Length: 496
Ligand code: NAD
Picture 1 (cartoon, protein in one colour):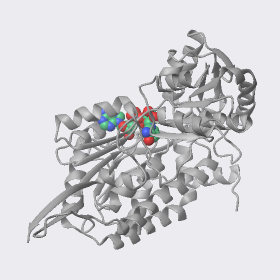
Picture 2 (cartoon, helix red, strand yellow; picture 1 turned 180 degrees about the horizontal axis):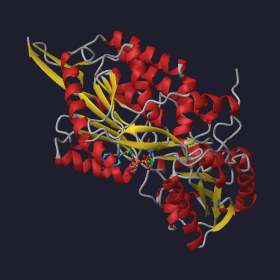
Picture 3 (cartoon, rainbow, N blue to C red; picture 1 turned 180 degrees about the vertical axis):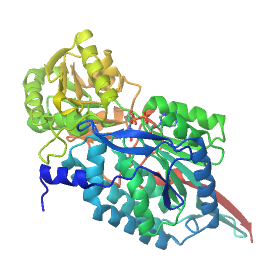
Picture 4 (tube, rainbow, N blue to C red; picture 1 turned 90 degrees about the vertical axis):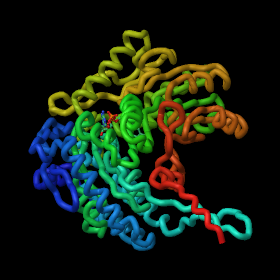
């Protein structure tokens, strides 16, 4: 059955929203009793009061997670058994997909059609993929002398803290939870204070799936309180993070100031999307360029926010992008026909609007969008926006806006395109459009980015590692490479 806007609105009214933390298999209030308001960017309504955890809650949750880890109830369970439970966890996320999609949309403003088609299924796939993999990975036997045996084995690190952002709340959590749980760790998940609801909800599904109490805990709250407490904790072994580069750097400091915990960071981006004159299909490239900046309201770490266009085709290509962007119009996220929802909150909306002003101030030419819309709804909506005539040194080209604002930059040859593309502190993703195979490969090799797409934008699945070069982070989510973050290597050398 396809649900209509009014179906979703009815369900939203009837929804029971849990706002408490989840520790050792049960929902509970923050020790302080403090809460914060969870406001929907769709229309400004109060969704729930959410537990505002702090250091005291972090202390208790880490102590419990450690005890559960040491007990071996999960960490020493046979991989095939953990696999079965992880797959059940993924199944339960799918079975509760409509509720989770609704929570995601109400909480962070993304279109319900995206929550249903992208976020929830991809989160289930991530958990299932890691679960399925765990009983198929072998350790190593070293090439020793005849009278020795050398074993190279992997062990779970112990207690993992996962701090995640608000743009794909459940999906970013699942990219961490999949390998962290499958490898046997105990996890404390700290969702963003801007979108905590799905993380809180799936904690109960984990228990229903058979993950023992204390293995997955969820502590909602602010970054500077509970996030900081986890990052500075002496008994957290590994900290995995997705979020801004600014906070990522701070977390490295916290690790150095405390127990030198392993810190794995997935941070910001300012990704170049390079369209050469010999692109195989300019219309397809234009549609992808529009989607690359408008999907998820541009609140995507890999958003194609710098569109580099070969000068000889710019006059022909830019109108195609402007035309393609007309399909991306802000609307009520609960309407299944809506392609662009609300920005996550007023702060983020004002941030995006201030970058639009900076584009004007720095002399770029506005050719599409540029305004707040639907103000009467009480929500936070901004039109997808294009600036032409952008220089790579302008603020809108240098800084991550994390909203639907596209900078169009012209170039004259391959060398110039690569130089502009790489002239950024970030290195998360890049795309190249050309019919020339050698040019595609040579450009892809020259780009300093963790993911490079050719003749498409945003390809890949769970089999491909995802993460950044330079200040976009370290380590990788997804694929078997992600398991490295959640395990320690041990060499055991035996004299025979
Ligand atoms: P953010 O850095 O502000 O917050 C991320 C998380 O860190 C939140 O849970 C927040 O509460 C917490 N935090 C904030 N201050 C903290 C502190 N002092 N100590 C501990 N935790 C703290 O980022 P955001 O605004 O939530 O998300 C947007 C950013 O995420 C963008 O920069 C985007 O590019 C990035 N992102 C990256 C990827 C990736 O895979 N590379 C994916 C999605 C989003």
